[in-house]
Image (cartoon, rainbow, N blue to C red; front, side):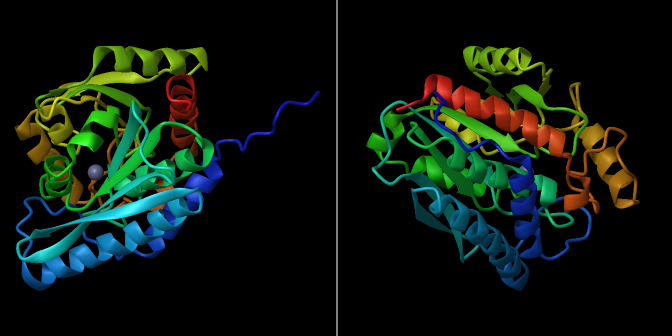
Length: 296
Ligand SMILES: [Zn+2]
């Protein structure tokens, strides 16, 4: 007897969603280095961010998820986080995937439309699982949205989330990396080993790296005691210092292109530089991870 036909993870559909998100975005010149957003410039930034959120939410809602806005203010302006969970409500021992909808260079295809689109596809693939999603505003100025989200989680929500996986820039680098550390946030050993093991079983090889001078949306979760890890696709398989980051920014602003292909925070952060193969690999691994550990 033929087995039940499940929808297959589709990297093509992820790419299509990335393009839709970028179509709602306006081009930003390369990498705003230090964020001092205020006034009209901030409003425009938040409006573009919201347009991207709207597209992501419309996909998630097609898959039997409810979405809730968690609003906050930043420099006097309204900003929006989005929390999505199964229509029946959040279940105990859930995995939470997180990403951000603001962007600061090019059309923000890699950073971070890749992750929004991947979360929408995970929602489609992982029905009837203990899974939820959050997307944050204002990550680029220093994870303002995620810090607000964590600080305002109810005790019940906090207790129901078992693991948090941060998705950052999944498409353009030479391969996929599971971060052992970002800022002070040390990834959970068991979680990291498990993701590597699933990748290996499928014949994929993910790299490991530590980014002690970066920041990311899962840091406030780690600070609040959650088990966390970050998956990313970048060309950094070594420790990066602040001096190296400054030098790289100057290189990108002068029109330089990274060797491995990562377009993060550069003028080339556009859909055509996203590698479908990276999305396919991380999608396959995360769907299997969820179905193995978080089936309802
Ligand atoms: Zn990002």
